[in-house]
Image (cartoon, rainbow, N blue to C red):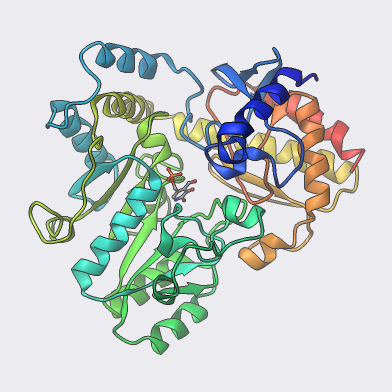
Length: 428
Ligand code: PLP
């Protein structure tokens, strides 16, 4: 494939945007080469500035669960835009999306909308600290909760791709309040709690990790975490920015039948516009300003365009009883197909999958935490990535990312992808 125009646009961008991108992982640093500039997208496909068509397995890092330029979402945004794009005053649509979200997600009474997953998670932690009157938090190595200071401690995702999980600019003071635990290791969490008696406000976790590749919770890990948190008066925060409205209507809480105390959303809930949200039961949410003392605000929060996109998206998901089964079925089909062709060609690998999240690790050992995720062979991943790209299949340019399956993918697209993997696997 020819990427002449993308390369030229990247060179131009590099002069005025740091690294040529507005979010680091887009820059292809982990895999080499230059990023592809998108012209437009429809359904399961991206069309780039050089006229190439790519089957998209990133889908804007998750939001486009029903495919690109999905008509009900686009129509809702266009109609709203004609009536004004932001007022900084309440609008009815904010209540409509809030009512629908509260009806779809277990164990929440109220929800507040923000502009990104980062904002949702950082606000959730502030709320947990305000509610419990404790300062420390536990996060898991390899989990990413956005780029706010408290979370940039072994953060997974792009931060891991660059080998700099701790960012300069995060103060020692902030870092000391973030305790790091090992994913899927309940004994480790128990020890941290014991060593910091009555100091921990919350445990924040991706209930299915998606930022060290896809790593499912194992051996009732979430249930045990729930028990520990309850026992020690610690709030359990599920960061469902990836899993919310993706694994089930009610996200991972529904899938695993476990109630978190605070739930964070992003990605799908915005239908492709900048939306995040956090939600909890009344006693917690009522601590937020203007009802309570915990401050949180946003000029563009709940703006009508974002709310229109989000409402259209989750309405579609709510009305389609089969959508999550279809997504899981397509993902399972892809999983089996890729497993077969990698095995045929004796490529050492492990595939993890939950619902419509899947990732391929190039190591034989089970991937259960950040350490085992980091063992994957990155040289093999780079060849895999570029080999697929050359055949028109676009996966995330980092071994630490999940593939996001969209309902717009047909079984022909999946077969095409499996065939592309077959061809690449001969070169690995
Ligand atoms: N939490 C999780 C689990 C994420 O995957 C991400 C982003 O990828 C975030 C939080 C941050 O969301 P945003 O990029 O919208 O700030």
